[in-house]
Image 1 (cartoon, rainbow, N blue to C red):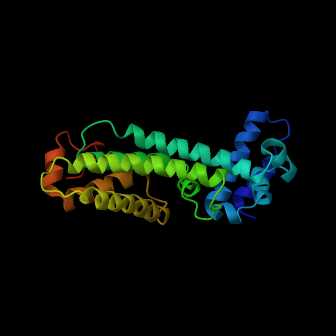
Image 2: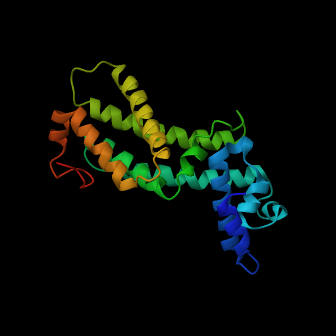
Image 3: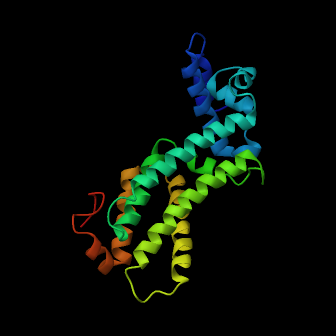
Length: 222
């Protein structure tokens, strides 16, 4: 049993208001499913993490699927709202930095949210898959819009360029999040600054043209 599970078990939840206990269960479940995926995640371990009995999970949520779906809906909503908030402003390279910074900040205290939305162990059909696919499509849609608007400024692009550019953007975001998971000591602020520096080096002319206010996040290094 993890130290976290031992600590939460020791606290106990007797007398805790229902809403607070429900929140505790969801936090434990998000951690369990985020680390192991839907297929390998255990409601028994969720109960251990939350310091409650396993039957209480079913009393609150009815089933493992319902518990997972609630976690997924919270995670997906947070990510979609974070990315949507970053779409305001110029459609230049600073938009890419704003978007990744929004993702980093959304995941800083809840890194498992990304794994919930992109869980490869979900069944290939059914409510869980449909919900996860819906959030993925919305995140992908916003990415595709951003890439298309950025490329539209250049008369030299071909019709398929936006499609390739969108796939490259998806890969960049996924790779950045995966790298961050291997470097958990990095804060969201540090990750945003690192990505900003890389963009400035790889695309200096485009970045200079877009960066007229000291960087979209105000953290550009000189």
